[in-house]
View (tube, rainbow, N blue to C red):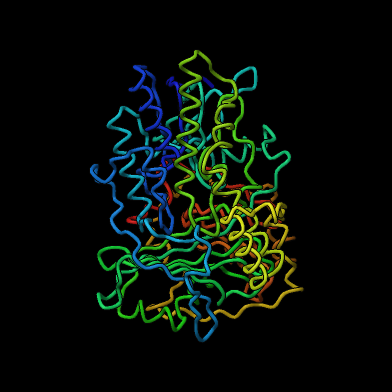
Length: 552
């Protein structure tokens, strides 16, 4: 169909740290070299930051490079880490890991506890001040390709299409945003990145990406329970020794505490519920007293790239590149990825600027690949490449010992003693049939410390236009019951942290059918990742839908 279009030198899909850093860096180069070039950023959330969810303790190394005077410019990095602790939990107690045992790269000295959503909002202000056009509430729904097969931009999602496909009174067709280069910064498991990786075979020769799911709550606690600047990371209980994961507790400003739990999506037991593990986590005797008398003020969930160095795909395709978590630059043992996301955005912007300034368009930004190989991002990830797979391979205890030794040797310049790189299994292939696993009996929520999914989703401010096509599409509508329910006990009802998937039966408990409550979706992408049959395909809903995270 004929569509309206707008033309830019660079189009960026995603208004997170990577996309905004790319836009800022591109405009900085324009100003430095007197070039009048255009760049726009698409953001599917109702505003920049609405869909941003992270712990987060941020390493300011990339921000120092991008905006050296960020403190004077009022960047919302307000709480510097003053106390760093690592606990190993057992059901009834904890052991504090002496700090000198931890590899230096695990130190959080000089880092900041932040709301990454607020950091993104601030970056958006800087970008707009430089002339970047930002379009919140608009999705990148389709890739725009030329006759030669190269990427020529994106098509935004149609608005006002009913659930049955009819055009409502509010119908507005999507627009073509044409670009000489398109940078994909959708975040973890983005739908366009997924398509591009498949279409251009960008995973050839690399390991599959693996993921975790992070469940996070923001609490306002009593002043006597609050220690601003304290960072606590935990491992162990409530997870078993075969499951990778752990918790975090960050004391921000204003008596607020961010508490979260991460479960590696390579877990085996289909009865596992990451949401319920998070609720159990808060009941530990070392944790519950911190929250006593407090109140939960926000909730969210998000998938996390955990494949690391060996899972990074080819970063470029004709006409564009993958940046940030669209490619997967999270340093798993450091529990940090924002600094790498920002830096990769900056490097891709530099390569795109040089190409446009030289009169090129639609080719591969090979300079970006070389910049990555020469950068501290490459070194950051290479040092820790075996951390997660060693735990999956050897179990929690021996895997932790191995990864600790590996990181110490790398820090001492002796990494050549462990030159190998472990591989990964795809997360959905790790799930075992229900008949081979024990059901997990999770306690009922008390409504004070522990909660159910629906009251949690309410705190995420999630909203979707109800009369629209379901964005959680099924390749085969018979598979959820025939395979997932009958063989794996319907794991989608448990791995989803928002109550989206629900198996309904008749009064006798027979004739199950899957109900999809798409309006609850917090866009975490776990279903797209962990579905054992890969039958669920997450696509973008109407722009502006989804969560609206405050201070997360």
